Length: 288
Image (cartoon, rainbow, N blue to C red):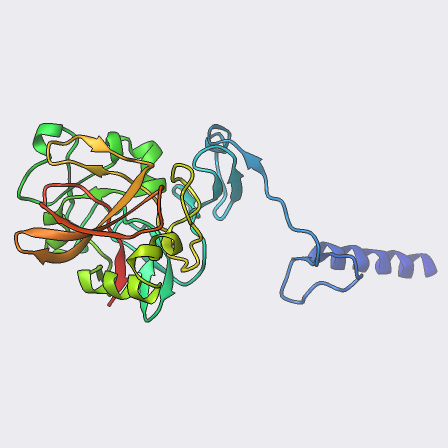
């Protein structure tokens, strides 16, 4: 009889151990809501680290599977059931917003305005209509909305830098930004830079430490805006300045031109200019 009782007790212990696991250095029990409860004040958790080629060989991948990719673009990726989603290179915090393609962007509040922390990379307007992808240089200058990836290289440049859009795409009534969001105006950029101390120093406060060429002067990103470079496309279709500068359209006209902002690797300024709408720049959206 004692043998049977002991056996039942051992089975109960094994069942309880299998139901919940606690890993810690204070011998505390796992939280009742957790299958696995890892607790430490001095160490982290390491997930599998691999290259993009190694990640691509995981087949089938389970929904929610998480890995850390070691080659460019390095960072955390999770499998959403249909593909791998990059968790981003942003700094800072906030909420998130999802565009018409299902891309998710972290957001940050700077002053009273909430901004996307990444450059827009949507390929459809808000109503689902496709934006024209223009790869041929001679076809870039046009009256209709268009987008492209720098050097026509979606694989290497989409996640890191976002898309480049012409100004007709920015102003299309079908809207580039998700519902409840809009392309930042000239006035909203003024509010942003004024809040951060003025255009002479605001560039350093919005620049990410990532991707810009060195020395990436004064890049502190204390605002959490996480501005990255992305270059631009000229009216004749030629690409330029991928890692040197970031350029962002506003949705505001200056006569027949459109206002834009630019920051670069060599100083802390946010520069303000206007230019013709057949150039290709990045876009940041602001919450309505």
